Length: 131
Image 1 (cartoon, rainbow, N blue to C red):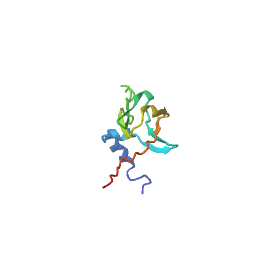
Image 2: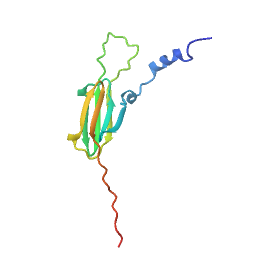
Image 3: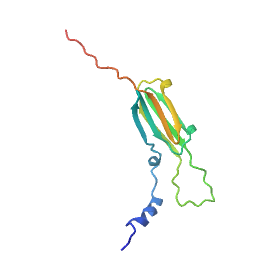
Image 4: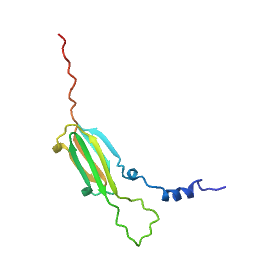
């Protein structure tokens, strides 16, 4: 009878040889909510510096992009596992017809916070009177 889990030894062994999905580690999680008449987007970007992140808005779409490089590898190091990788991410959010001057962004402790006023819904459906 063993007190160790069935897959204790083999889990780490096969993980070392399995190819790492690129986007899984760089898929940044976000929360989007409304508060005080504004829309707030909070995006987790751990391991990034403020200078590594770029925001732009075009035709009602807010794009958040970032790129990071892993630390410079030292040839004297013998890695047993290397999970910190370099790469890029890109997330897009449809925000509507918001003036870029009304969009505010702040970066603190690995969290990017973007705030903008909630767009008022315009009635697009028109009724035509039948004579």
